[in-house]
Length: 284
Image 1 (cartoon, rainbow, N blue to C red):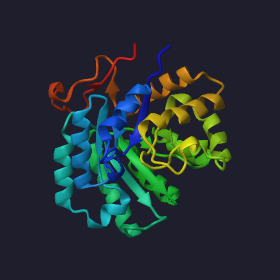
Image 2 (cartoon, rainbow, N blue to C red):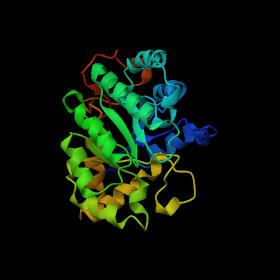
Image 3 (tube, rainbow, N blue to C red):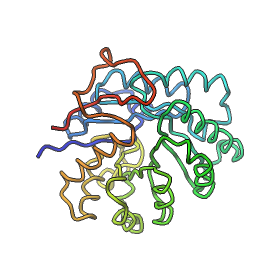
């Protein structure tokens, strides 16, 4: 059985990848990573993320503003992002959310723009990619307020308790595990990973950040998502091939993608239509 993996969260347009972005994508393909979700964190970055997605058939984009940057966000910026979001290679709004650890934007401003971006995603009919750090209670409160309007989404780099996992799952979200799952101190998180239904689990790199244990201290890249999938397989007493297949399919589901055709080249991608599945690949 051939290995087909998805990296559900990477940042291919960070400066760390400027010298060799194409080579990074090629190495991912060689490692069996057939799908990469390239995640936006701001207006300028989201434009770059979309441009990169259009260069590589197996790369798709999200657009949005990270909580660190919302202090400078304007209504005009949201309008500009809405233009980007209509592109057929954009599959979600994100990454958005709350970060009360670094507080690079005031907490109340973060809350305001998290709500605004959730409403925006609802209007677009798009799932959301959510960042939360030291802010789980506030994140859950806001998500529960928007539960009826959510079109699904992903809790990026999940690192919480089983009770928190269940709360996010109850909102219809998927949970994505990063390379942190492989760290020696992540025993409690590994116990959580054993209990979560595997049809709601994704794997990610968050590249260039958070490399799995074998590459600690080095730049992370999408090819390394295999290490997290391998550990997830071990934890659940399954084969690596099975977990690769499951997490790939879950990524398609989370981002409302269809495997009915080969990955589309950017020039042949069809115009975006709300709530229509976008064809991406064939796992056979």
